[in-house]
Length: 93
Image 1 (cartoon, rainbow, N blue to C red):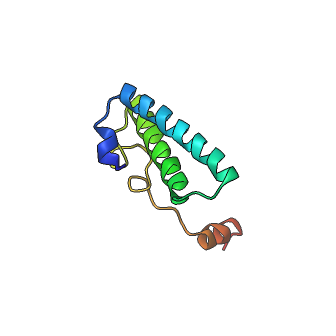
Image 2 (cartoon, rainbow, N blue to C red; image 1 turned 90 degrees about the vertical axis):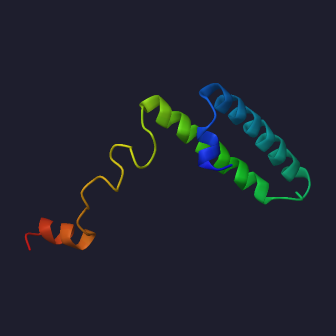
């Protein structure tokens, strides 16, 4: 499921969908413990979909609109000096 599709859902639909996917993931994990799965990659897809949905819910609760509008994202903060420059600065070089 893509981020744009997820963002179209309201909070309650997202929570319901997370519960469904969590249940499906649980069942697949149990099945994987007893027999080989036909689609083992489905476990990874489920985990990532659940994470995407939880991330979008968190963004909404914090009032962020996504990576382009979030505070403190790498694109909006000043670049850090490389590790070598920071180390030499501490040593007084």
